[in-house]
Length: 325
Image (cartoon, rainbow, N blue to C red; front, side, top):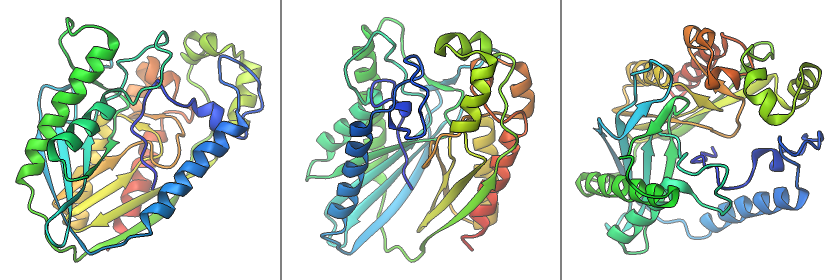
């Protein structure tokens, strides 16, 4: 399961999409060499990881962080406060890796920032690796961040300074949690994948006001865009490691749906710690509750399967979680 962190200052999704033959600069141009480079780097990481397998222990903890993210939708107040830290140590107690889950868009950078950056998650990872030391690898995965933004005082400086400050502060929060986690033998380990048939592809009436204008698409072009690039099926994988379950969501889900899924999966599996792995393996679009889709706005305008998409994905994710038993 691939779990990207999300950033606006890295590879363009459409530059990595072989089916993108539209040659529209605003959408992004497919770049074969870049696609092959990204695929080769992922393959290299998998091969390297398999060269030196050793016995390990793991443990997770979730804490509530109430004031570090917010709902960015107009009138929205619900936000996911869960910070989940998973500690993986070798059997002799030496720290090996730490995996952090937090729900917030990495969007401090904007269209004028033309250098590569992992935004605040990159700073979080580097901060944890520095604080823990011992050659540990820190990893990050986002949650149901479709309508979630980070919070930071407005006087925090440039975009780069804001991203660094937020990432360092969240890294310190996660490090404090890491210190309290007690790894133990992992007795339960596994995964289960389910295919999800997606609703009919369509675009929201607001799309032409936002994405249509931004990307240079008219209605005729948009229909071809959906037919050519948006899939009719997707998949979700649930991953179990000890008392942790990660639920893969193939896109950007609203926090309301993510919180609903986590609650139901705790009941189904009995797992103590349940997280959403957002943007898992694929990006099919934003995913909203039906009433939020009908309200419109940016998130609805880039949701390409109508108002039932959110419920469809929720049902598929819960079905995959049931398959863990």
